[in-house]
Length: 291
Image (cartoon, rainbow, N blue to C red):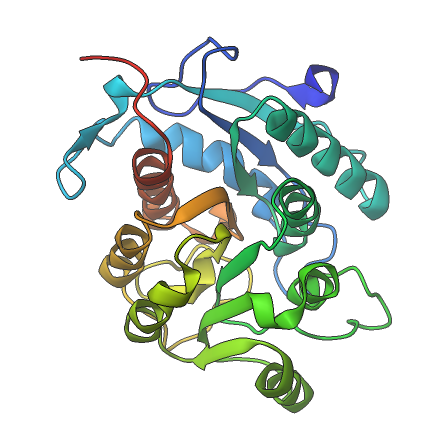
């Protein structure tokens, strides 16, 4: 898989030791199907670059990155404009990470990059549950005739794992047909994040869980650097609290998508993304080094 990767600046405190790493970060710098403002291909590097402004210690989790082995593999090398080949390469890299019994933490890029990630995670972990945090339903059958789109990624995920294994939080935008589909096929919680998440935690216990987090679930007042901002979202504090609420689940994969640095002049969206990555490593990885 390493022949498909381009090295870049690594995430805060990342080890150079792939073999002993429990968590592997990889960037998927693709924004070929975006429907409004492009630029998310720059998201993975923006997250890495601002991560140095964070402490390695999380006071909320009382855990420190210094006690964890995690590896930043760089970005998947993608052929510009070739959607299916790019998705194939992303899937191949994630498959390699999973075959080595490591936790994949994937940085987008547009939301469509989550599809090959979910496909590979679902193949390794039967009965996978997907937790989808987003402003948008992403349940279109197609967008302008294209079945592979960031606007249809969760519909394609439903084709893979079944809609009843998908839980959607913070959704506040979509077509009428998407909301009708969700009512019949998925577990969608319109406009809310933390309250319904806490309610469903008992039914998720013991199941393998993949988290796909579109940064636009957060209100653009807190996270303006995204391609399709939607007012009325949760706060930065609430999405972090949602992540903390998941720490006791069997989380087996995580992706963070749709950070677009071109619209993030203060870098606060990338900084929030970096903090979410740090907390995900600490919440879902396993300490493998002694301080």
